[in-house]
Image 1 (cartoon, rainbow, N blue to C red):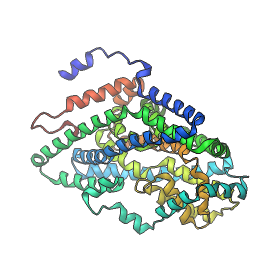
Image 2 (cartoon, one colour; image 1 turned 180 degrees about the vertical axis):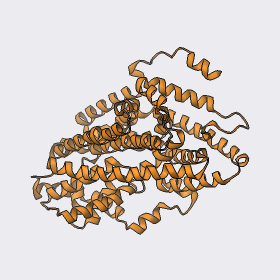
Image 3 (cartoon, rainbow, N blue to C red; image 1 turned 135 degrees about the vertical axis):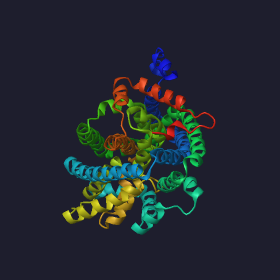
Image 4 (cartoon, helix red, strand yellow; image 1 turned 90 degrees about the horizontal axis):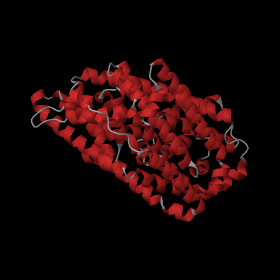
Length: 460
């Protein structure tokens, strides 16, 4: 009865545009660019604002991933359902990641990035950032055995303290499986407690997101002020080509996937537009993961599918990272006059398929795993990493955005394939995104467990 009265109530008035988070973040980005160009030293000093915002976001990422994955496994009710979603998502991740790498390599040759820079330009840029690049390369050099070993935690708390997302996923999967093996009467209070803690963390994120415009302003002002116009002009073609490539990947590749599975790509992008703007401003996909875990069920994917696929995709489905690595190695090969053979190209692809999966486990993200790829190749000069170091901040905005959009599409596709999708919710989100968000909030409120009851989020 309460749900009927709620739905029949007149919808609240729309907030003024200037009160919207997306508008505020967009204005902050423009102001950051202006400050960085006019007062570069002052702009560079504002890095602290962006760092504080990202640190606050990261405090909730690992606990939320743990809670949502555990809740997703427990809500599945049996291991067969968990295995079906996990296997489907894994196959999808591998196929699309391979396509992204090939797409990035093809785009790099099509745009001829790095051609004509010459050895002099390369050496000048290398001198400027050689120390940073060498440090990143040494941090990222790892073997397959080390990579595999680092996926598994050596203690429960350490994975959360270090922010190791893959290790948190492993703990969550094992804990969820253990919870699922308990009798219903014994696991009900545990699930109820986890649901309440999860809701508290979502409110925690809502408060932090109010600081997104401030964090975005500081991050963008730093990027412009620290790099200066010389670096931007010297590598403008690479940056422009990369953005065109990312837009093309979203429109063509992800668009084709959405067409095959009858997903309204533009409707989905409209639904998550605020999160996309935040990612562009912060250049971090982590900044919106908690919000997407809460929001995507409003687009039709079940909470179980979102809780299992979305966090896993952050570690294994990094489309933007794959494209960046493909374009980056071709750029460096052209800058240093190195002709890559077909055999070397095949080897690079195999290396990138491995190292791209480590972006969530290595401190420094995409650029560090790119350094691992260059180091492992054996024929791309490591000192060339400094060429890309100056403009990585600008490219990382597109990388993070593509990663987020790709994971949202992956979650919806997996939910459809596994019968975990509600087309009515998707239709509402396409028609009225704000109404869909209000419905999710109402669902959380109506599903809040009463004392002694099993939490609604743990049911199907």
